[in-house]
Length: 428
View 1 (cartoon, rainbow, N blue to C red):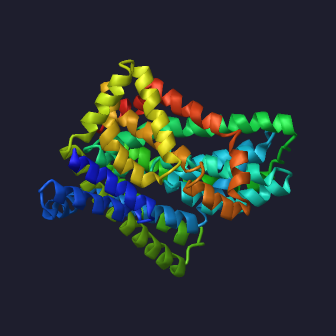
View 2: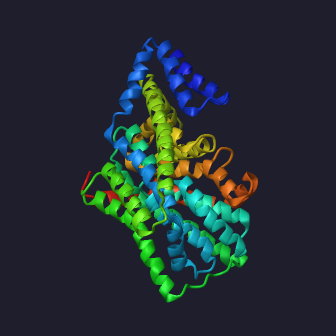
View 3: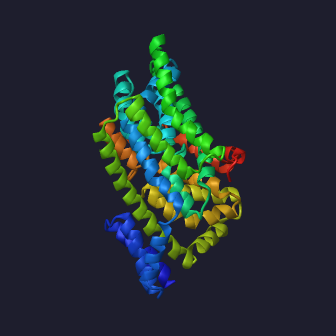
């Protein structure tokens, strides 16, 4: 009992006094190991062992690929393609925002990259056409969640490792239908709001320009096609797919679009190294924290608590979702993946949910957390890009959260949405 109090109590105290999450996890594990007489060397071994897994190589490569796509002109061309496809609909520019994020999520794998890259393009365009600034910024933030659901997503790699080796390829394939559903549900919301608020339609570009937009857009999306077909057909693993994505991003930026400079390349490389260092340090410390929780049998105790409340799988899964939604308002996405997975995965498995489905449900929950105050990272980036405040953008989110929650609960209670594509794959 004392060891569990030392682990959880130290972590909560450090978080409350403002210690960074990675250090809080590592220090808490050290304190608990000391109280348990395990020795601090055990924690160091767990940190080192957790970082020696080959699939982790995909994380820096996907981060680098996303940065290169962002700087290489891909974002603007995907916006143009979405504009051509859905612009003529009522509220066309708002729907463009949703569809573009669907496209960009398939090449970047990052919600923050989507907001940072396409927000400066989409938000001023929408405001100029008569859309509310708050709604424009909120929609940009909400639609960016597709970036962590539609592969490639380095957060899926993190979940795979924490969950004990769940297939990254299976997770990638499982994310496509929910990611597209999220874009479609948000688009339907925009369509209804457009009819109610009188948002305008957009004009179709001339034929010659339309052909060029289609060609450029398809070239940008080819990266996502290569990744999903390659993994599904067993041509390469998810880790190898990350290397292919980097090479294709370099090819597009330097050879095809010629918008990527060596200065940009070096800066993206440096930024990717920094981000990777932060992510891997977090994974190492969180793995030690998770190992201590397992050693102290905390996940088993949590599962007993849930099963003590109800034995009905519907109720258990509802409670898990509500807990994750609440935690998502308080902490960032990556730390929550590594903290909550060891605790909640046994609970949802006892309720009949498989690990692949839970991975997508977990990311949907925590993706919604990116859009909620007080600490939603996507929300704050959207405020900076959209030149608005957290209070105002949160009001704009009120009409978008129902669509996001609908996708979450559909994926929770209808496993087909997350299991159909993995069942067709050649690779396990």
